[in-house]
Each structure stands twice: as C-alpha cells, then as structure tokens.
Image (cartoon, rainbow, N blue to C red):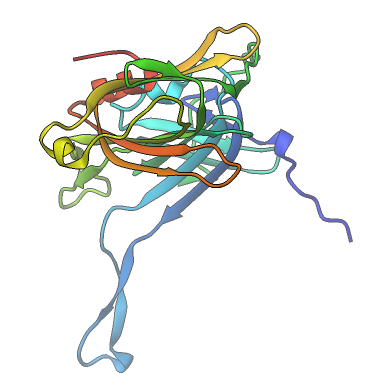
Length: 284
C-alpha cells in the first residue's frame, strides 16, 4: 500500500497574498477555549459547554534569511493580517491576525533564522478565503553566513561572534463586547522589551566592576548587520536603542578560547519604533 505525502516543495506560506521566502516550518492551529457547565438536578450534573473567550488560531513561522526584505517587519501595527499555508493537497487560511512575537538567531555553523508567531481572531481553517496569491517570481537569493555577521557594540565592530539571538514579545489584551464573537479592539502592553544575547571570543574586553555597574549601568545602542559573504552587501540590519547590559559571564578551558556571554535588554514605547528595530533604523 503506497502512502501519498505532501512534499515540502509543494508547500508555500503566504502573508497578505505574498509568498514568504526561506520558510523552514509553519505550524498552524486553532483553539476553542470552552468549559463544561454543570447544574443541580440533572443526571450526571452536565448541562452543556460554554465558550469562555473569543475563538482564535495561532501561526508560527520559521525562516532563514534570504533577502533584505521582510514583509512581517512592516505589519506590527496591524491587527487585520491574512495569510495561508497552501499545498497541493490542502490549505489552512487565517484572517484578522497580528504579530505577537519576533526573533532572529544565528550561530557559527548555522544560517541566520527568523521566527515569528501570530494570533488570529478572525476565521481560520481549510474553507477560509484569504487574499489572492501573488505569482511573482523570486528575486536573487542571498545567503547570510555567520562569517558575515557584524556586531557594533562597546564602541567598536566585532566579527568574533559565536552566536546571537534577538527576540521580543508584543503582548496585546483583547477587549470584547457582549454579543460579539470577536474582540472589538486590542490594548498593547507597553513598554515592549527587546532582548538580545550573544557570545564573543574575548580579545580586548574587561568586565565591568559589579558594584560600580549598579550606579552606572552600561547603556548603548547596538547594531547587528548581516552581509553577503561574497559581495559584502548588507542583507539585514537590526537596531537596539539604549540597550542595557543585564547579564555577563565568561568561560574558558584548556585548549579553548575565552568566551564571554552578554545579555542586553531595551525598552521600546511604540510599535512604530519596534518596526525600526527590525529594520535597523536608528531613533531617539
């Protein structure tokens, strides 16, 4: 008996009708948050079920960086995003979604990846209509490698980076009205914290004294730049304003280089500025 499977080259992910490049995985699911209702005088006590909150679906997408352009970075202010995961056999579409997390990571021996998740309070599933699909061909594919990663920190640029991760969560509280199936609007939980952690091979860095650090914390802007390893052209840039160092450690062993690990955080007060973080645009 033969088993027909959906091959990866027949699966595509579309956001607002535009096909995303470099997708490695896409997880789509929906949730019905219901509870059981019991009452005195009924056999077994069970009366029925009640939906406790609006229905929603969740979408998680992992990609490798192949292009300077990322449509997701321009949609952080929107709560009406539509998209679909489409294959030759089935389709899972969603509507009225918003981005609730975004991260980028890279390590020596690995390609840089971008992950994002969305929550959709609109319709979702196989019978949902999304925007028309664009059939435009892909442009030139650019591969960013760890050797072409630049980190501007401590006032100088370092290419001795071993790993890097930048992440943020955009929390929205849905506000519902009696008689409506979907939330009326959403309240963004500010400030939005941007976290980054990276490891460097130590060359000329000395750790700050902890007691002095409490009164005079290290705070600076951080730029992360991915470049094409052949041409040197910039592929993607991320920016963290007034980032504060919150954790430091260093390790070394016989025959190993001295490795230092840093954790920074930055607080952003608007979604417009979060978009600038993801596009590498400096702001006050």
